[in-house]
Image (cartoon, rainbow, N blue to C red):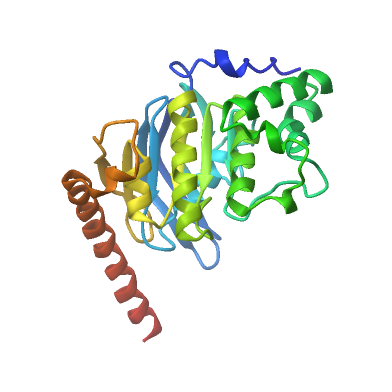
Length: 287
C-alpha cells in the first residue's frame, strides 16, 4: 500500500522533485513514417523550480510531457526523478501519483462535487478513509482562496477558471513530486487567464512544488516561471534556456518592467527563428 500523503501544511518541498532528462529521443513509427519528435533532448530541473516550455507547434513539448507523465515511451535516452531511473530505452515509464498532469481540456468528474473530485485519488487508492480524505480536502480548499465555500458544488456550476483551480488542487492533494501542466489556460479569455495566473502563483509560492508547464504564450511563460525553455522545431531539442530572474512574489506590475520586456524579446526571437524554420520546411515538404 502506498505511504499516506503528507499533510498539506507539512509538505516538504525542498528535497523531492529533481528531474533529469538525458539525451532523450523519440521516434514515432520507426519502421514507417519515421517521425522524429525529439532528438538529444537534455534538461535538468532542480526540485521546486517552475519551468515553462515553449516552442513552435510540433516541436515535441507534449511528447516530452507525456514521457515524463508515463503516458509514452522513449526511443533513446534516460529520465531520472530524484536520481531514480524513471524511463529508459529498456524501461517503459508508468504513470504514478508522484507525477500528476493537468490537461488543457479538463478532467473533473461531472457527477461528483468539488470536494469529491479533489479527494478522489486519496479514496480510490485507499490511502485514507473517506472521512479523513474529506477533512484533508476541506483543509486544502480553505487554504487556497477559501474554496471550501464551493465544496458541494458540481463542475457545471463553476466557471472554467474555477474548474481549473479545482483540478490543480486535486493534483496537489496527492503530494506529487512534480506538477505537469499541459497548456491548462489556453482556452480561457484574457481576464480569466490573468486571474488563473495569480492563483497558480499563489499555490506555487505556498507549496513550492516542481512545475513543468507547457504553453504557447510567451508572456505567460515568463510571468510564471523560474526558467523558460525554448525548443527547436522538429526534431525537438533545447534551443535556449532562459533564466527568469524576476523577484517573487509577482503581480501584474511585473509584466511592465523593463527587464520583463527584455526577457520576453529574447524568447520571442528564439521562438520566431524556429517557427520560421518550421514554416520554410513545410513549404519544401509540400513542394
